Length: 413
Image: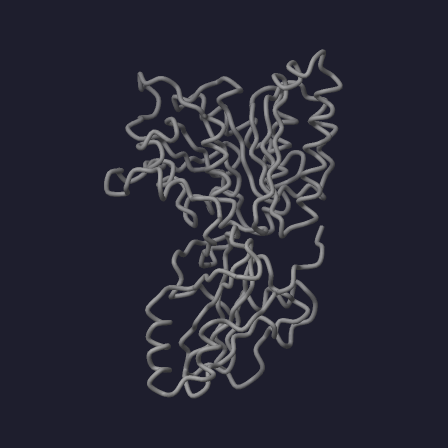
């Protein structure tokens, strides 16, 4: 499942370099300039056009150690590599990394103030060290954007100058032009829970509006509370970038329940097919056509989206599977045996090599099977559309959010 983490390519940043030779007045100017801009500062790397120098500055005069945890490149075997350097005669700490210009990532910063060693020094093993670093850290108060992940943890988001645009930032209507999203809480027959986001101006049953497409999302609590998807979708709908669509956000529950029921051949897949879809099609003006029904998930939810196609008996037409945990159960055979689905968009980041290789292999196997079973290349393309993309990102909600919205826009285009 896991392959070795990418190591941090640490360099001497512009602030650290200038500080070393500056006198006191110049240092005051440098400090004021650094604190006046948000983290991270991103400068061109003259030695590598595809890379940049990403720099963070933290003000923590009473800290004993400051650490930067980044989603794609934290080295659990050498966590001290991620510790910021304290600038002489100051309360400022800084670190600079050489990272791709196209990267989008989440990160957190830990300021350790206790007398003992920081927990990332004493933890043993990959998982324990990573959890120790994340647990001691929080979102960057000087970061550009904050969101929340699977267990409600806050993280900051950073994007390089060549990272794919977040469509809602440039193509969408302004928040002031869009009403508060309309979200209903839905109790499912066997005790599960979902939330239903209704498109702008749409009522429940009884509306004479044309039925809309439906997007079903696993880990719905993250998309609802942590990533603000209803607001994003409403803005894009108001601007015309997306058609009106209903979104069903399925609650994955506790961490234990998520591992037990998400990403397996049945579990929450059965919940979608046997409970959620019938209730939605009865109580909301959503299309019953499989081509208008999309399912998406990330990690465990990514393979769950594929299982929903494989076991859906034609109820769902399209899946957006991001960083799917294909190591968990073999889904290729079931997908090939079920003819009644239309398309799959697979995605896995360049900083998750195992998942990227598995997703690319699955995409190629599905495309090959379609070509072999078709009478002509045109027939194969019309029967099964399977795409694969590898964004410059890790296993990361910050990248998944942009990838999902871009995939939706491409699908409806």
